[in-house]
Length: 261
Length: 323
View (tube, rainbow over the protein chains, first blue to last red):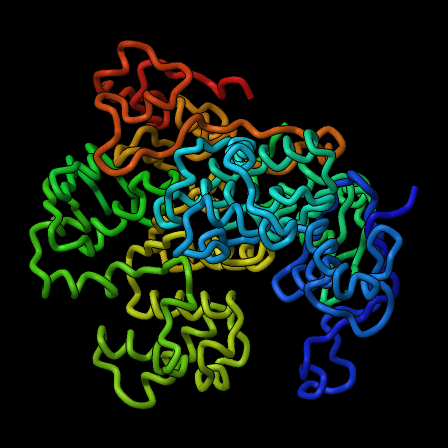
């Protein structure tokens, strides 16, 4: 089976970051990983470990300086020009704070139509928009509303609906529930799992919550200081971590978590 | 040391808070848990006298023998910050970005004590030591943006304990932090409360965090304390259906490291969402979202108390439900 995303010996730094901090300052260093179609991968690590940057490089929002990143067997550099829209369509991101990622002056209907207009070059029909919003468990009445009229959980559903409106192959969710209450978190996590199963999506979850990742993802990538500390099947990595760092994350997570059967 | 009796907070004709009884013993740590909009932050603000001007408050908040609700603004400002300290969720927003760390902490000392000059600096350094910040002498010349989120929260805690308060109210103090930093800050709060015999009221939506820090918990919904008791009793045997639902929705970590059985497991959710202010049903506030609601629930149940002061307001009390 060919990998959907294949990253080999990839290095990345932000513009000017190396000039200020010196030659060795990579934000991501020597990253190699592959993501299989229809798999669910969790990327964990602390703030500043590079997990969000890695996601942005994998979906082509940031360009790496060394190594290779391939999507569907094709190097990301081959998606230049007209191909750029294909890459955007196939790779969608749901962000942490839905209130900040939706335009406050647009109705939900307009926010949902934008990606289709931009990436498919057509105006979506009403039926299509209604189907998109209902798929995430919201009613059509929210379409005429503005973001400030919705709750955090509803907005995150809109964010998910928006990403799915262009039928992506892979959905990146960057801390999609960390701004939400425990009870709303549960609804959004279940929704992501249901949609993944229904639509045959590949799902990449960025999270600092090991409980969430161990529940949702078969594969795990542990990031530290811009490098991969450890990666593999979630159950084996977490049951028997090789890296002391993974073990320390686990210890901290266990201390302040409930035990669930 | 802190006793709330028949506390009602009414804003714009809506009863936001109605707490008939809530106690915090000296040196103990109480968790206040609920969803956004359940009234947990409003309860903390009612104790602190920080409610908006238009709110009507009745009942009594007895703190060390004194009813805080009878105090005027000047009297209350001597209690707030001095005898009751506060730590909030987002340290980056609570610290003044234009002011050096030392100055922010020393402000808290100057306001509440007669210390001057070098004595103040010495006290700041001592406080930064107590919250386990490295190299306090250099740190006090730094600005907030030069510190990590965890370090900023330690500075907030240092300022909050500067006047040796008997009670510290911490409102979601670790929600914005990484898990390892969260654990460190939680351990710090526990050890400060033990060393200083300082009571802690810890507000959070996460029962996992509360179980780690607190010995008792009060579950709040629709401005009512629906259940309270020892944390171990409440987590093991939740009586109110809302408590059970909150527990079941918590992602948690797998028991006995059984990660393979955990994968793909859906979480229990709570039907619907927290109603807007004034839209809660009469009787039990949770009944329109409760799977076990009966006709009886349209009237408010009387509190039931069992062993270890485990208290709840539910007509159909029960264990964890389906989970």
